[in-house]
Length: 392
Image 1 (cartoon, helix red, strand yellow):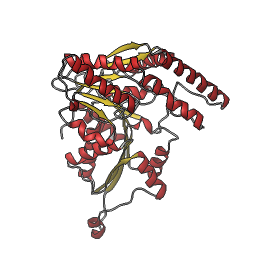
Image 2 (cartoon, helix red, strand yellow):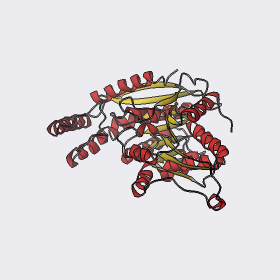
Image 3 (cartoon, helix red, strand yellow):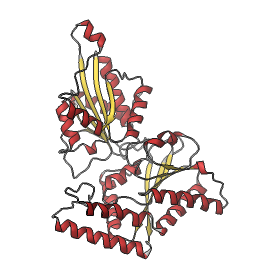
Image 4 (cartoon, one colour):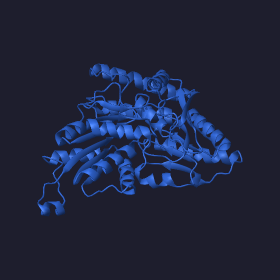
């Protein structure tokens, strides 16, 4: 297995410190570093019992495939979601303690080591159930990989290795971001503003503090608040001008380039509307397109389709916000998104950063509705990207 210089440095840092976060941009090969760690330990120990923990089932499949491809033993290995690991931890006094039958019979002194790798480790901040389970497991090696550490959260393990996109310019695609202003249809804008105002009143009544616009982690949410939070994205995602602008940008890119395009939205109905409109728009423009060239990606059940050669436009709803490798993706259009989740936006943008022999640039188009929340979110995004040195 060949590692780049910075990957070797990251591996050395892990072996030296044994516990810590590795922070690298999307496309820098964090998974490969994890694989290299497991191979190194399996070479130097009789037994290596390990867990690779990920947020989604799609990432379980991706890690499992990488482990098998690189001949890492799965005898004492597990790849699972955070939720599964928490469940196992709750049911058992220790998640470790296995020994292979051969070594158990031999009776000799076994050199063994335990490992936990947390992918997308920005989720594993203090006070989470995941972190409680990891602390309880107490592995010999504890490594977290992330491209987007949350600056507003505390982590119980230090950053032991970090490189920015600028540091790795020769390996990562150059990122360009374009703002696309959109005027919402009057009714949708009014409904959005009315509901956010009602939401503010409910927060005030229940003495709920919303820090930095992060509306995903609010405690003590009742059904009425949940209903409003679930409804808000609809007014943007399903707005006629949002869908039309999304399709206009996608059609222009499709007609000018053979490169692949990701469109991110928040509603299945919006994804379906964008799909139908794109097919119709390209046909009206006389641009050849078939239905298998436009793929609506709905999550783990469609993972294998990502690696098919047919599609040119990929429309995703909540999936593809973290971790999943998307081959040869050059363009991304954020049609609608959670304006309170900047890290989620950065993770989606990161899907475009993998460099290939024929791709040096990634272009991301962000639709910004004429709403104060989205305008502020766009500015926060730019500040985050600048602070994290995600542009060269």
